[in-house]
Image (tube, rainbow over all chains, first blue to last red; front, side):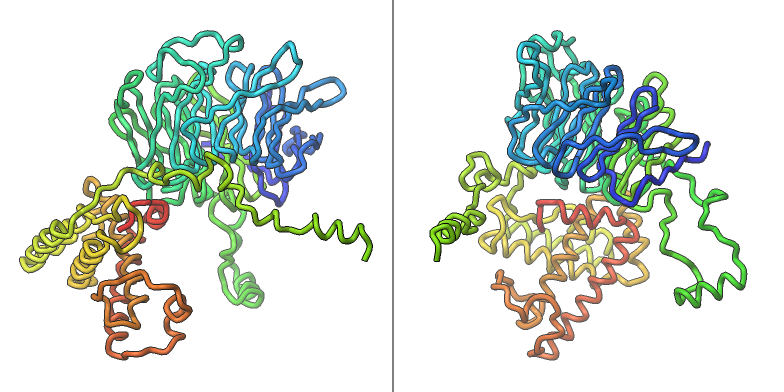
Length: 363
Length: 216
């Protein structure tokens, strides 16, 4: 297994990150700006700063084909940054929300994106040709609290959302004129806008931090603040699901999760490292960590000389320097995303967190 | 006093900051029942708890401490659907807590970890230890707040928060030395169990106690 590629960008938290499809541009949400990095040699160099928000940028996503960047912020706005020869040109989106926007993702079709907000709704945004403007429709119905996370089904109609009311939900975001009529799935057959296709909650009811559809779209996984991940297998529309498997772990809560094929989930969060879960419809279990600890060249394994020992005792009053975590990330991981994929499986993935590092891992 | 000054003072007051805007909004969280945020809960009658207690005591007398512990944890008495308060469910829940503490006190320190590991490894074991953790925290709250009354067994009513009863109980005057000694002993049992449960069920267990709406 190759060693992870670690880049320490700055000493600020990274709210979200996104790579362009060719991996040449890395967008980072830092404070109120979106920073664009490109790789020069072995390091990421700051190339451009997109300034348009006046409060913390909470989420960011680059559409793989069109190259458009969408960002959303606590200033209640979302901006679509269109690539032009003169640089990125922002367009304001009419979200019509009066609380912070928390999360944004392009649909796989790239004709829509969804913005979660503290206004207890999801704004599904699409481009209206006649007005030359991004407009939004609201998914509102059973949401009782802030929407923290979103994930798209491969068919670009179904949308999974996690919320601080401890529910993970699956909605239809079908918009006439924008979407083609979707094939019926286990989640539903007829899918008018705001159909609730599923609503799930754990017994111990923690905030939902992350949701993800499996590559086929026939299973949903979510991570909640009760240190659990839950996998839901729907059976048929309007029917109870075939299986709901909840794994309570001994670890701290997970902030983000991705599927690696249909039989593995990678999740990371407050433990500052990524964990693997393996299983299927018959059951899931924690199968180990992604990170290999104690490998050579970790950097902090200094020579155990007498000089070094006495110097440490003199400086810090102890012989071991224990201010460093043993993990690569030195603080909570807030987002993991697939980086290179082959088919349904993830070959490498990236993680960012509160420590300002971006790490590329071999899955 | 100029007119401008008066004008600004009248309009720039910060009274608007204290308006509770959530109350004015129809679908705001203050205007809906929080019961939708957690799984439905059922009320357990006091008679049921008494029956359970009797069964648990019998197991304990028979020397099956693990069975007794499991018995209490698999049928926890949760706060009723009506929410907090000492109304009808309070007595039953306090009785259940007393039973759990009795069982915990009867188990030897050397048996704790192996027993917890066996419970954790069994099906549904993780949830059992979550429930145990809830009882430990509740027990700690009960023993510390009732230290000024008579021991841990008194039926506890939610008393108004006074500086003496919260926070550092050692700071306040100790009225009855014998009773505080017994609560100290109960507390040390709870603390050593807490340590062992965290060793087996991890920090996730504490997180789940905090997120869970089903209070014991």
